[in-house]
Every structure is written in C-alpha cells, then in structure tokens.
Length: 223
Image (cartoon, rainbow, N blue to C red):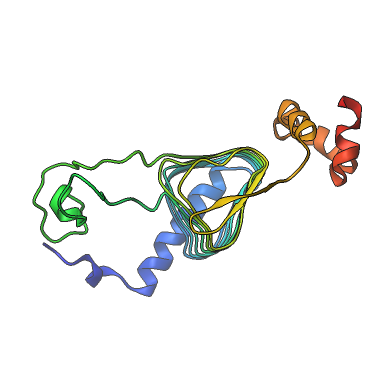
C-alpha cells in the first residue's frame, strides 16, 4: 500500500485549498472559505462563511450559516442562520458497543485508513445523518453524535456531548448534554416556529430588523 503522506507538502496543500476556494467562491454568492479548509461534497446557500482549517464532508448549509475555525462537520443537513463555534465536531462516527466483538473498525468494516481490514463491507453502518434546524447556536468544542436532530432555535453549550435529539428553542449542556432551560415562553416559541422568519426574503428581514431585537416586540402582533 502506497504511503500518500510522501506526497504531502505545504505547497500541495496550499494549491489544493486554493483550487477549492476558487471553485466554491465562484459557484456560491457571497461565500468565503477560510485558509486550508477542506470541502468534500458540500452545498451552500448565500452569505455563508467557513473559517480556517475546517473539514466539511457530505453536508449542506442554508443561507447565512457559518462554521468557525477547526470544526469538522460530516453527514449534516443544516438550516439557515446557524452559528457554529470553533472546534465543533458533528457526526464524528461511532464504534459498536454491543453484539460485535471488537470496537476496532478493521474487525467490522473496511475503512481505507486501516492498513489491513478483515471485512469486505461495513457491518456496523450506523445512521450518521445529523439534522440541524434553523437559527441554531452550537458553542465551542461541542460534539454532536451521529443520527441526532437539533430543533430550530436550540443552543448547545460549550464542551457538551449531544447524543440525543434536542427540542426547538431549548438550551442543553453537559456530558452527556441535558436540558437546561427553554429560551422563551411556550407561546413565544409557537410564534417563532409558525413565523419561519428564516425563510422570509432577505429584504423583509432587513426592513423588519428592529423587531428582532426584542422577543416581546416580535411576538406582540401574534399574541
């Protein structure tokens, strides 16, 4: 097996990144890609930015969502206006913990990074897909496990490990992440969910930006 690391050097890494940057910034409106970030099968909306040294694999992002430095985002469908902090990991992969004898991937699967595998296909194959709603804030160093769904408006506290679904407009934190509190009153959350403001035209949001500064003002016409 040829050791591909012999071909790695600062120039080749810079060249690959530059080609990726040109490709994506030419394709997507107002998109910015940070230094030495890697994109594999990534789809963006408008006004997205990706920080430095980010890895994105098989994922899509709605308008205005951004990814901060050193994050790794895999197998994720993300909505609009999401804020992803530095060093976040989404869908990092799972190892089997029961039934299969070993947790080592060479025993139950056939990944390319293992120098020798004992299977011809993946016999673990967990559901890796993660769904992140709109207006979600995932703080620094958080880990989102494979298969998790995070509702609109949720907040994931720093250094948390999320291994189960998170309800809309809920703040969770800890290892594993647990419910802390709701962001707003139930009737206010209902208004926000029904309004789907993130799907409004950008000009509408700009025109009505003043009502976003206070939840009571935003909800007053509906409550």
